[in-house]
Length: 543
Figure 1 (spheres, helix red, strand yellow):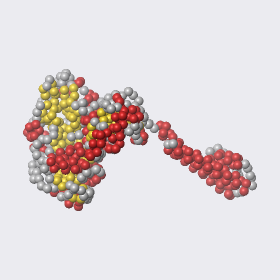
Figure 2: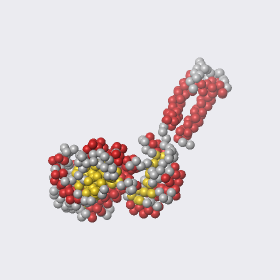
Figure 3: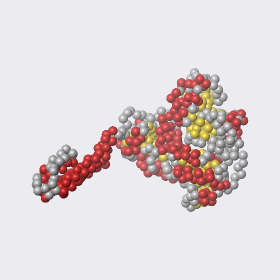
Figure 4: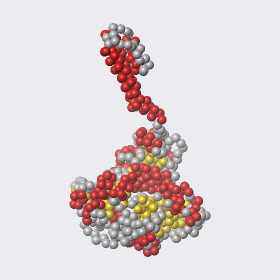
């Protein structure tokens, strides 16, 4: 019995009891105070007529004060019960009749899709990635209210239990390309086991929150087990370790001796305070600036008048030597490493991963955490100025905030910026929608766990689609010439129409990197383009 049915039953039973009670009292009152006895059925008729407003005054006038008071009480009670029925019974009934309910099974033929078991913030990023590649998906959501909300928001979702054979069959798992288990660790292993029962051949990808439990996901039969927090820690650490030396580090090779790299501008770099045109990056290094992040917002192509600061991250293409030259320009002119120069705030899975990578790179660091554990140097609260001072934040060069609560990260950023206006603040965000607030609070670089893990899932699922992601924020993809064949890049006007940049053109084993507006795309060419999710989707729609 659902809530509305139970509420209706209680109301009807209660109403019947009130009517019968008033009928008995009225019957007694007419005999005792009016000396006008009548049958109980006649008294019941009077109460029903009064409650339904169809027979007011049929027995009037009454002579006794007691009966006048009783009739007034009956009148008021009847009105209250009528109005009570509207919000309790009728309104919910109308809402249920007009609301949109998520289906319980896939209502169309679907093949080569991705079955996403439960919807999380990282699932939103995954869906965006899949849609940009025109890959179908179905979200299997066990919570009916959540499923209805997602359905009304336009997601392809069914209300079913992903841990049951019936639920996965309703999602047409046997015809899917992959299944993503994205709930708790225990539920994920159950989903994987159920998926094997439905179809042993479907690729199974499981998300693990605690890395030490990954082996159990393997034992359950997952083909790939992903640990988003570990990847996030590695990404945060790379923002520090890439600034230690002039070694380029990770880059994407798109041709022989031609790479694409993401290079953050560090505080203290000679580029800070200059515009892109004034920096003379192109003249001094020969690289091509594809795009740039300004306070977390990706711009492609960046304006020549855009001012560079300590939060700017450049996306550049060029040879290894050219990118090495740009890397040296982005670094601070004075490093002077000393104990405590980097402060890690938060020592959970993300913080421990950061510390491990800094240890490997021989970068000194201090750890601040609420709990006293091995590896924690200072025990304290990240939002308390005195505790941050104890970690020597006021003299630090970089602070990495690896806290699990976004509100704590936002507040800690404000305190740290007040204690040390020149410090570089690198932050972790649990939810993507909080990234902008962290930049406003003063963070120089923010990575969202939801975005990192969502892109990580997409790269794993679309492994045969030649998708490359740059630090989980912008996509570098390789596509066929498509509708661009026979058109010059100038006439196609790709940048202004899509926000994407054509980085290279691959033709008969040759990589063309000097791409002016007169370069004409030929049939059979492959293009490497860079852009955001929206830009890539727009490019694919147009070309």
